[in-house]
Image (tube, rainbow, N blue to C red; front, side, top):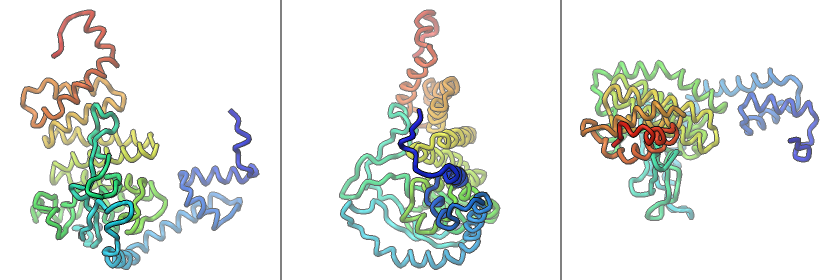
Length: 364
Ligand SMILES: [Zn+2]
């Protein structure tokens, strides 16, 4: 297929520069535009790319000073956010939170309980991966993807969580069951050391994925799907980090990656989606091992393995739910989904035919 007609009318050397920029900036048009604005069609492409990247990195260094004023202005502008835009009311409400690790204060958005009608269809509605999406809304709230503002990110140290209770806040919603409330005071210094020690890792994760430095406003009001995917990755890392102090964090680490996978799927970034799914599998295995959220972990391990193309592993996991005799808490809730998945896998593996032939070991 040669498509001469659709090719841009650029000389080959410019096309080559565009190709290099596209590769260096992973297709980010705003960065490519920023590059061309600064350096034009100069032939020294690689050094210029490094220069631009270094400038962006230097911006990180001055972030802390910029942060304070940016957060202040957010606080000031918070009441100005209109509750009744033509498209409907904001399904989120705003709370002031404090990062327990770096003490940054910033606003966070929390989904109102009766605002969105949530469905769980990703990646197959017969046996979904339990990631919420909004099908419609109630009471005049506008429909928004509930994953967009799902993870709360500290804009200063990038500590992130899908749970409001992982931060200090005056909201009653953060409640007594949140991580911070549950954590014994004597354990806090060890947790803080772990979170602080991984700050560099979080910064590298951000730099790997973004090539621009999100402002507090980007994290809050202007969060794009790409940024939401990063937020879930950060949240998963942080939940994983805290799991040795609170084993329910294993499940939350896996769950955040499932949400990330759904966003990447929506963005058409299927290779990254697959990596997120495999990584989430590892967290759910740990969640299963350490005994929290048993039935949901087992079910998800089965469905994730199936979507990664490993039917036999999938069957082993859902088999635990299908053969459960009331020992796994919550197993009943997943039984029908597991039955549906089992049928699909049996067809995939050609087991229905062989069962019919041998007529042995009838399955119930
Ligand atoms: Zn922080």
